[in-house]
Length: 385
Ligand SMILES: Cc1ncc(COP(=O)(O)O)c(C=O)c1O
Image 1: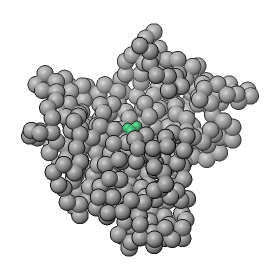
Image 2 (image 1 turned 90 degrees about the horizontal axis):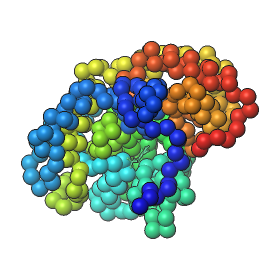
Image 3 (image 1 turned 90 degrees about the vertical axis):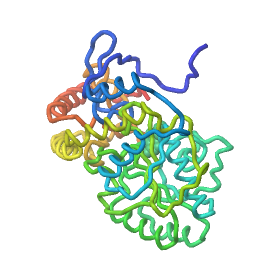
């Protein structure tokens, strides 16, 4: 059997990780400014995280949701405390798409309606409902029912209210900061207006914090900069630092009913200890504060690089916009400068999503290597996608 060839591959195989670094099979050390799509939150192979998982697997790794799993309660309590959503409920699943799928279903169950408003440039995952609210028809199959979805521009309050007035919308779904589209912020004022309109028309506001959450922006959730309280928040990626786990965080206005949602693997013992270890490290190492400080430090240094046209984002979720496609730059960064960075659907934007444990040392290292890579670019050419 061969693998189904759906991924463009960078020809490097990391075999070991430590903090903000990964090592390939020849022992070459790479600075990881991408965290495997924003997944590595507390750093590669953090000793406490590793110990918690090893200790747990020696006891029990899995049992289904038909028995008591008190680790789930511990996780929910810690997540409530650190995020400020103590009175919300948590439903555990395995991936970001599933967390969004469950959020959309809950909104539809709750309101009895089926239309959803999403935004241009949005990425919410690849399962049926999640891909329907993703602004990329190329990855939606005919059965993905996009006729229920209207895509609007950020800031277009008039169009938003026009849609909501029709009284057939169950939910509005929005990323705290758009990731895949190239780090695009909805704006504090727009989030506040959106939240007010959703309340006015009794429409469920779903905040997808799968990429922008878990401390990445210098707050636990990016939407907390706007001081709004959505009805549902979705999390995944950094939640397990690489162990698959996701959460749908649900306002107390929703009533649970046996059988309403369900999953085999979601909330298993190993996933829960991974997620508890992540929250313990975030709290003990004061990572959210550190992200805000290191992010600011990094941005100040990036501003001195003349080739960068704009710097978007917050904390350690940054998009660097150049006036040329960044594929050649990324190729030089990884092959010659030994730095992992990310692309986005905007070809001119380099995406930075490092581990939240990144310090000023790594920031300085990156600035040096980026400057060196920029000096090596003669004519930008298409090399990697
Ligand atoms: C904002 C956002 N939502 C949802 C997803 C889907 O998450 P997953 O790949 O875990 O299903 C992603 C993945 O990149 C994402 O960035």
